[in-house]
Length: 270
Image (cartoon, rainbow, N blue to C red; front, side):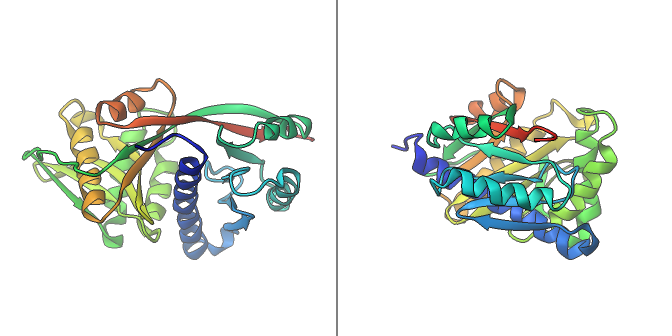
């Protein structure tokens, strides 16, 4: 039996941190002028992907070291030196005293995330024959990115170009396996996937509007879980907004909520 405790949180947060660090390294390689970089601060991963990027934040604060204030100072210096806002994704499995430290230093909670996991031992599924699902390489970066962006475009206004650029970099990140779903020869859904030690992370899944409600997302999820099991992963993880349809879909497919994570932002001028 797997317990939702600090040890599990360390594994899950490190997995997501490594996936984000791989993306930052891809950005640094493809766009050196961006200044993209990341830093390991006593186990806390601080990542800079640009001042406006959702990846510019830390993971693991308080899970690997008890030196909260020293680690915070180093992380704040890392971001402020680059003209970026300061964000931390904080697990509830950290010592409760960290909350007080964050409050005193001028941080405010701004976002909640359900961090979920699923055991893969014995996992199996029956593939939906109408879909072709495959892993793409860098030569098809534009196809994968365009499909992913088209799916996200209906979720947030004006985000399609941004998601296309992010998608092209995602395909080129090391340890990333971009899955593409095709229906009758046309790409209809895309999803990210990566393996870190014995945990695989599923992220960024979307379906183009005209192909929704046909099972593409379920097929994509099952294919990624099956691939993770085949590669020897013991756990799969994914994140979603609490109570969202994405969370519900994950739970329908055997995912359990390990904990709800809080994102903290350092108030401007602090």
